[in-house]
Image (cartoon, rainbow, N blue to C red; front, side, top):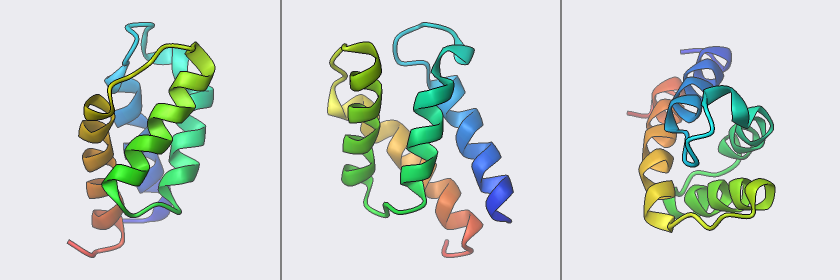
Amino acid sequence: MQTMEMKKRAVALLKEWDPFSAGEDAYDLEIADVVAGLHHIDHPTDLAKCIRNVYEQSYQIWIPLEKCMEISYKLLAVKYEAKCIV
């Protein structure tokens, strides 16, 4: 899987996630930041903290780390599949 395909799948997962029920098109900036972080982060907890920080900065609403962990695992699975690590 190419990096571009990984990015498309990661974006689709994050749009579907919708943590604040704001609609899938409400998070374009946050999704871009998380996908950028995904390229450099390999640990699920670190990625979950990155996700939480990005969304909390924009919306000033606290997200439990457990909710971020769920999407973190899915995103890392896409990343590892793209790198043929799995």
